[in-house]
Image 1: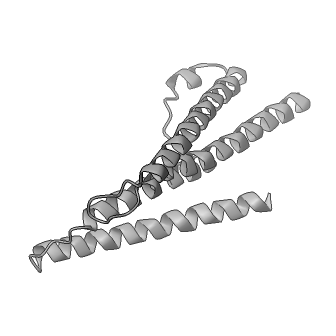
Image 2: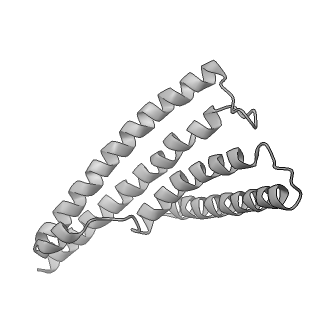
Length: 162
């Protein structure tokens, strides 16, 4: 479990650092535009790219902390023994989605690696931006597997006690 604790710390520190960096870029952009009357050509683009990375890394962390939005009306309507199966089904479907996005995200990354497409303002290779998809959703898939294991273990523990 030490590996996963280290992974969790990396997710927290990386997303926190990127959030602080994005905030600083936006503050500098606003200051430059409205106080100095000289807008930065790259500020909005960098903030957008940082936001993309924050979202995908944060998605993994949200799964770990069980903080994703969910429509629970149907699940709460069911009896407790069926709830775990609905939760497991949702987690498995989410894992399949993440795996598909990782697969196609890697293909997109490889395509952009070959084409050498660059962003207009920063001149940044676009594969760095698109790498957020397979990286973030790969981490999310790992977290979904952990969550599924916990759900199954808790269900097994309840059956043993009964």
